Length: 157
Image (cartoon, rainbow, N blue to C red; front, side):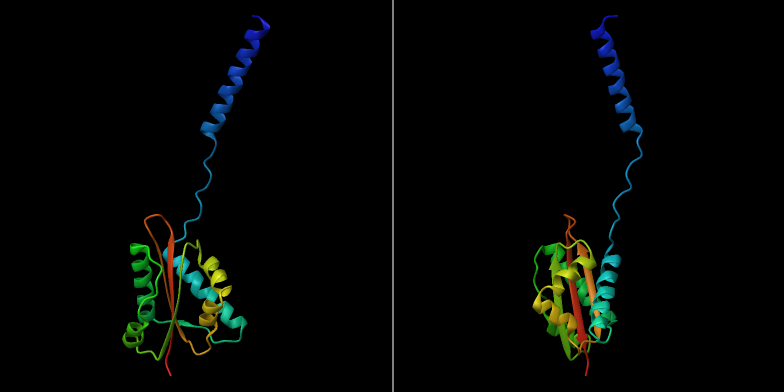
């Protein structure tokens, strides 16, 4: 066997070993999947942590408020439109005297959307509004995997 044939044989074996190594290598663990429930819990938890750091009352979830937030995030995801809902419906249906809403699209976690909202004066004001007592959060992924979020706040006198 000449030198060239020997080199080609060795090269072929190296390629075969490399292919086998790739074929039998363990698959990487799939990226952690964020569920709507996880996303929403992060928003509530992070919002209350921020409010606590500013010596404000923590917010309680209220089913009626939460229903409107979840319904609205689904609507925005389905229509792919970032718009506020009519908050007068939330006021009446949930027996509230004040409401506010933050909405967002494209943030991959509850923590990341809170960071963005806190950097925005209007959203920050809603989060830190001292009169608010209730919170509802909806987070829905659209058909492209983008998150649509509605955070609704409420208060009663």
